Length: 245
Image 1: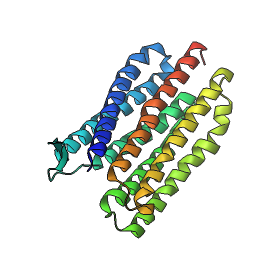
Image 2: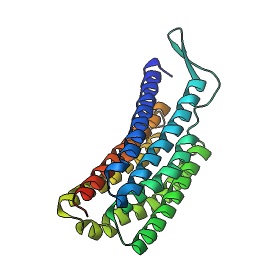
Image 3: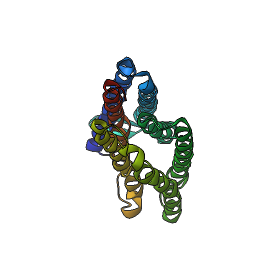
C-alpha cells in the first residue's frame, strides 16, 4: 500500500466515524422537536448512524491492525482489513433506512406493515447475496462474482420499483410544502444506493483497481445514504410537525 492510499483511507474512515457520531447525537436530540408521529423515524435515523458508527470503529481497528506507518513506509502486519463489518452493518441499517422513509410518509397502518415487510425482506436478501459475492468468493473468480451481483440486483431492482413506482402516489398526496422534500429524500436514497453496485463491479472491469478505492467508494456512499438521508428525514418530520400533518 502506498503512503497516499494509506492516508486517504485513514482519513476517510476517520471522517465517517465523526459524521456518524455527530449524526447519532443530532437525531436523538431532535426527537423532542417533532410530533409524536415522527419520533420513530428519527429514532431509526439515530439507530442507523449508531450502528454505522460502531461498525466503522471496528473497520478502523482492523485497518490499524493490518497496516502500520513506520519510517515513512506503510507495512503489512499480517492482519486483515475485515470488510465483513460493512455487511453486518448494512444487514441492519438498510432495512431501517427504508422504514424511515415509509414511516415519515405516514401510510395507513396496514400499508406500513405490508410495504415495510416486503422492503425489509428484499433488503436482507440483497445484502446477503452481496456479502456472498464479495467476501466469500475470491476476487479472481470473476464469473461467480457476476452471478452474485446479478442475483443481488433482483431484490435491489424490486426495492427501486417500490421507491419509484409504488410510493409515487403516496408521495403525491403529501402536503404541498413537504412533497418535494419527500421526493428528494427518495431520490437521494436511490442515487446513493446506485453507487454500491458500481463500486462492487470495479475489480471485475479493472482487476488493478485498488482495494483502497473500493473501501473509499463504499464509505462515501454510506455517508450519503445513512447520514445525509437521515437529515432529509428530519427536515420532513420537522416541517410536517409544524403544519400538523
